[in-house]
Amino acid sequence: TSNGQMMALMLAETETEDDRLVALARGGDRDAFARLVERHYDFIYRVAYRRLGHKADAEDVAQEVCVRLGRAISGFRGQGRFTTWLYALVLNAARDHGRKTARDRARVEAYAVHPLAAHAHAPEAEDEAEAVWQAVRQLPAKQCEAVLLVYGEGLGHGGGIGSDGVRGGHGSPWH
Image (tube, rainbow, N blue to C red; front, top):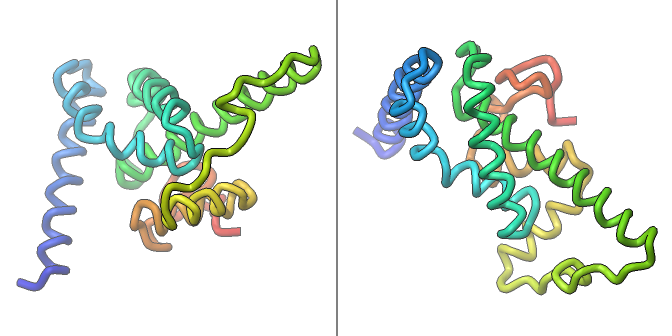
């Protein structure tokens, strides 16, 4: 078999295992839920970090997503891949975090308090890849999310999700 066929087989096995774990977790199986979180925590953190650009913010969002996942998993209907649905959940949490951070920053500035040193200036890019991701984060939200989805997570246009959280949904993030 070719590398492409092998990757497709591994992806299919991963999706099958995700489907099994989701079904068990939706039924209240805590071990299945814990295994699902363990399998996807790196993905959650990676998406949050690429969207927000700060480790502490990404860690906060990843923790929030794990909490939200516990409440939201019963709403997953299997209309697309679990990872696609999870990606939408992470982006929503990152957006919420970004709005909260912006409100907090505005509140600090309104009271003429100096912002914390961590937020006073953007960190220098340690390498070329980080510089590219910093530039991507400056794009309008939908364009940024599309780039993250395709290039950051390796999902092609066919694997994209709509703003409704469904793969191939009507609310396409591509425009």
